[in-house]
Amino acid sequence: MMCRGFSITLSGSARSWYRQLKPNSVGSFAELSRLFLTQFISGKKSLKLNTHLFTIKQGPKESLKDFMARFNEEALQVEDYDNKMALFAVFSGLKVGKFTFSIGKNPSKMLAELVTRAQKYTNAEEFSNSHKNVQVAELTTKGKRLRNEEPQSSSKKSDDRAPRDHRLSRKPEGKFRSYTPFNTSTKQILLDIRG
Image (cartoon, rainbow, N blue to C red; front, side):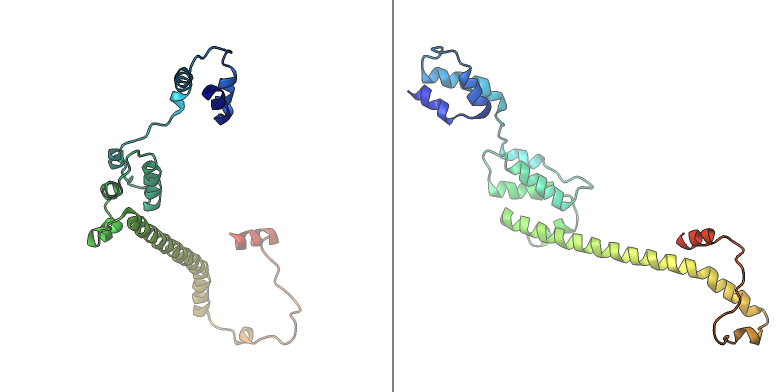
């Protein structure tokens, strides 16, 4: 009866395996259990010990956010998970930096508290980095504008040295009637402006 009821609990590949058993080939539930375990034991994930958490170290270029995510994934696979042991494992795995200095000044007593602090630190770090990126972009844009303006200012200086013609400084009345022809094609001028 237990052997027949066992099939109701199965699905997927386990159900297919059960259906392929030859009729009257199993004499007891213990034998069915042994056959089942033999078939599917390799698919079982092996759980890790608490000491495994001490092997998780933050990489030199790994962000705090990535390290904490990786640590949490590994902690889920620990069989005899102990909160204090996990807390010490995080401490030992962190690379030396501003966050470890902060923890050293005011140590966390619970892993949840440390995770919250790490999240706040990560948020602040990301905000700071985005702010720096905006400032760098502004400085780059400003630098490009200054470089583009330098030739104009140098040409103004050369014009300042030339004797002034007061007739040219007067604004013409009405619309212009004649224009100086270009010495370069319009296409080339537009390409230069774009560049």
